[in-house]
Structure formats: structure tokens, C-alpha cells
Amino acid sequence: MASFNRVILVGNLTRDVELRYTPQGTPVTEVGLAVNDRRRNQQGEWVEETTFVDVTLWGRQAEVAKEYLGKGSPVLIEGRLKLDTWETDGQRRSKLRVVADRMQMLGRAGGNGGATQRSNDATAPTDVEAGEAGEEDFPF
Image (cartoon, rainbow, N blue to C red; front, side):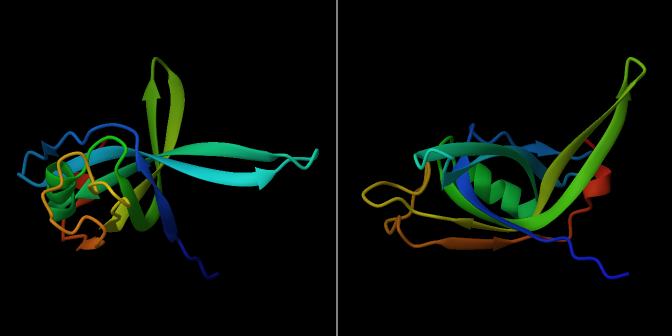
């Protein structure tokens, strides 16, 4: 049976980036992404629906996100879905998140691409590919 696990999202960060390190020294961060969808309801009115997605960035991607992005920054994320499961107080819990393979910073017209972006050309997208970080080293 064939399978394919790929996600591409474009949205805005919901909070500032907090960089952490695994015991082995690998940079990691988990950011929140708000993705908006606009559609018509049964009455024909336009309705905005926001979906909030947790995204994990590893290695150089995490460092770049910390340096250049902040709350509200537009970003494109390409990665894969991962289901985390754990037990708390005897109850089994789970959470679906995206592990990013690629992050592209998107500039805003007339503004800077992120809260602290230092680029003179804020409208030029910047690509960052995932490194060889081992996500199993840092469970959430």
C-alpha cells in the first residue's frame, strides 16, 4: 500500500519564536501558525475560518526563525504530519503537528518580513531547508 505524507501551509506566526536546544546541542523550536481560509456559507456570505497548526523547526531553520521572524510574520512551511501521543494522569492524549522540512519567509508589502528582519529587501522570500537534526532527540 502506497502512502504520502506532505503538507504545504502559508500563514502567520501566532507568537514570537522561542529557541531551545536538545541535550546534544541541536536547535529546535515549536511555532504556532495561523492559516486562514475564506469560503461562502449556505447563505452565500463570505466566512473567514482560521486553523491553528503547531510546527516544529529543527537545526538551522530554527535559528533563522528566531533571528528573523516574530509574531505575525508570514511564512510558508513545507513538511510532514506527525502524531505525538502521551499519557497524563491516566488519560491518553495526542496532538497532530507538522515537522518542517522547508521554511520560506514571506515579506509583507510596505513592511518588513518579520518582527526583527534585517534584510533591506523585505519582499524577497528566503528559503531554509531542514538539516540532519534528529527529532527523536527532543520529544514534546
